[in-house]
Amino acid sequence: MVSGSGEIGSVRQVFFGSGLPGKTSVERLEKLDEEKHMIVYRVIGGDHKLVNFHVTTSLYEVVNVNENKKTFVVESYTVDIPEDSNEEDTCYFANTIIELNLKNLAIVVERMVDNGVKSS
Image (cartoon, rainbow, N blue to C red; front, top):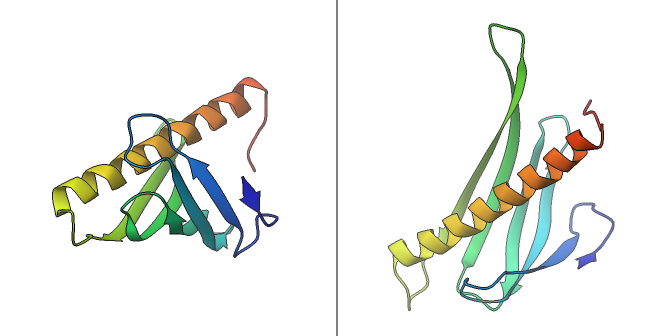
């Protein structure tokens, strides 16, 4: 569910699949830079233990020697470790969220390619 039209400050509620601690997360779009191909969002709520979770997603186009273009996606994050948890568990959960985000992005891009949508 999204509140806002995709501009800075828009908020979305994400529902986790089974197997993750917590069922929902509330995220706010902090930065959107189309020129640099970057988005930044911050988790502002939800029923999980992530505290001050801040994620940056960047896209980089690379051209190899055969002139083939590829896009690399890099997601980085910062997160505070809650008092009732530890670094290993917190990073494991955050890494799982990042992995799921990247898998979902891959699905969206593959569908776009299958439907003949080209990027600029």
